[in-house]
Image (cartoon, rainbow, N blue to C red; front, side):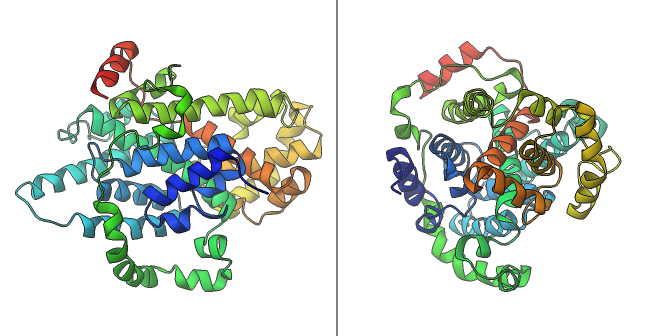
Length: 397
């Protein structure tokens, strides 16, 4: 089956601009192309990745790769951790030229990592950044980070909180298995820390050239010709508005994702009766979450045990979740939220695929991950004059 024009254009853009683009543009089993189950989310997610990671504004690519690695390690996503260690090694090699400001760059890099860690903790604990910063004594540690750099840090954390979740849930633990069908036992050896360290030394010189190319904002604007030079006009919700400090193109990229999430939920899931409003309310209910004593860092076995003992009773209490298909959706999405590593190869995932087909099952997990990530995003909640900021960004652009 041939792909749509926009899907072909998206793959061409990935191939041209992303490190290892010739590999990452192919198939449907790598962290980017798993989103290709829907053309609209595929192009929008790629735009967010490109404008956030490939374009350089405040933070260097090595710093952003270090943030991506930090988030992936904390989320126990071995696939993303492996990939970003490799990309980080290549980016460091490409930007290893020493100059008079190297020490200052090092301090900026460390503060960005520290701030990214604070953003991650705020998302995991669902606490305000300012409150958490004050309680941990970190309120004065970020003097080298301006508003733009802080927004960029937060955006990288938000992006990879989603990427880690869907990769763990849909692709499992080993990228080699997902992308190249290498047996899992062999993939574990290939992706062990020692082997990856050796491979980084071999691959990083080959990748370094891709990180030396400087890309300006608007890298993916041509994929959205209907928007014109001003981009997305609808405003973001208040808790995401700080992304405007990271630039108009990044704001547009995040807004496109937000609009897709809302539209897909209303126009496809609910309208086509794939999911009911009652099921979505159930998924959002605080009592559906694991007890705070074991959240937010649930081991997959712990998550499965909690789900098996708690979810049936919770669903029964709602009284209108008796359809086996909806129950399968509920199990998978609850696990996707709290322990995505428990989804892959679970009986619940196979049941969902049986009811909906693999593409639709993947798409629902992508939608839910993006919805949950954007709703729980921290570090981008800032009250600003949106019109004034948009006008300033357009003039600068």
